[in-house]
Amino acid sequence: MEPQIINLPKILDARGNLSFVEEDTHIPFKIKRTYWLYDVPGGECRGGHAYKENEEFIIALSGSFDVVLDDGVKKRIFTLNRSYYGLFVPKGLWREMENFSTNSLAMILSSTDYDEKDYIRDYDLFLKLKGNGEI
Image (cartoon, rainbow, N blue to C red; front, side, top):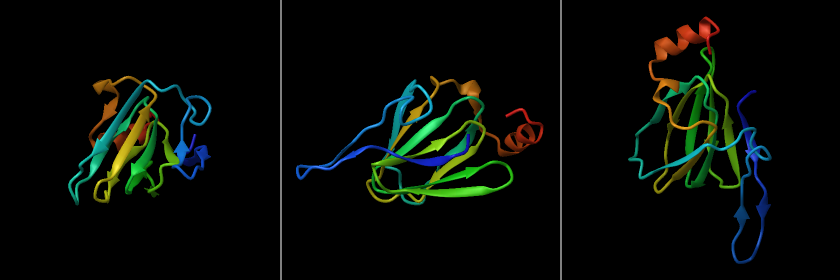
């Protein structure tokens, strides 16, 4: 699968809007882990790794930030700034998050439990594995 922006249901109400996400309905995987990023200092970058198996769905619950995805040949930048859509990130892509606005809140839904062995944290190794077709 390719990375893609996925729109989520949006229920409009004068008292405040509501959106939600359901596994295997709005996103193409079962949710095994959820985590969030907050209080990211200005100019900082998060991520800087790829996964062998894990897939993610990233939502900007508040504020905005950019997600930079790299397949080893080209880079794509996705700006997330609304809580009613998110970015599906398939396995095997190098991911970085940057340009966090003040008080931004990123929620990440993951397809696997945390496993340090699933991470590729060295970009040169990522390129080698990609080139060999190992990820």
